[in-house]
Length: 160
Image (cartoon, rainbow, N blue to C red; front, side, top):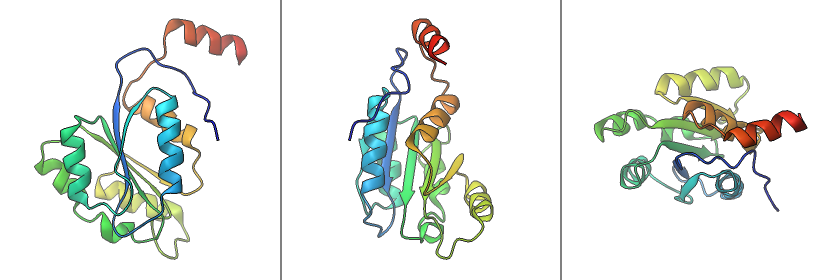
């Protein structure tokens, strides 16, 4: 399965910590996202599955991450993420962009309510389990102010 780059940005490489939180063992989504992010010029630190909040924060600190992407598909992210941004702040990482995505709540009927809950917890963006990797990559580019080179912009203009 190949993932085509949205663009191969030539500016500073951005580091992203990616993983699955809590007791969740779903690995396919983060593997696809890791491949897509890498193909698009991001330096990806993939923590794998069943990570604690502290493991995310420690990795973000150790790797000087620009963003932390938390995944959860087993529906218990509300419990797993309580206090997450307190740990981020305690580590002095308030400037790190944080995303969460997946099937975040058991019996999730209204995703907008779920999105609001995680925004209130401090996440910069909240994605459902149907989100395409390209959407998250474009959001990261926007939030991290990653710009493509002039030649890439001209190429995209000509093919659009």
